[in-house]
Image 1 (spheres, rainbow, N blue to C red):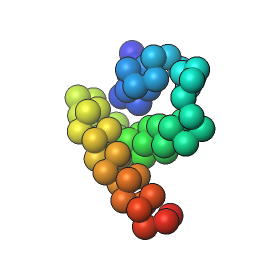
Image 2 (tube, one colour):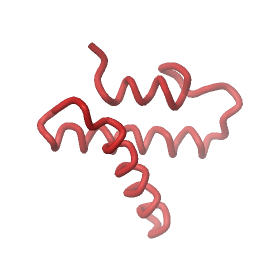
Image 3 (cartoon, rainbow, N blue to C red):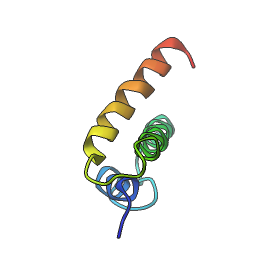
Length: 70
C-alpha cells in the first residue's frame, strides 16, 4: 500500500523523481511540500484518507515559510 506522500509524489511529479524540465526551484518547492505533507500525516497518527488535505496544508505552510524567508 502506498503512503499518502508517495501517492501525492506520483501525482504531482509523474513519478518518484523530479520531472525533467522542471526548474531547480520547482523541484525544491515540491520536495519541501512533500516533506511537510508527510510530517502532517505523521502528526495525525499516520491515518489514511486525508492526503489531499495534508498536501494543501503543506503548500500553505511552505509558501508562508518562503514569504517569511525561512
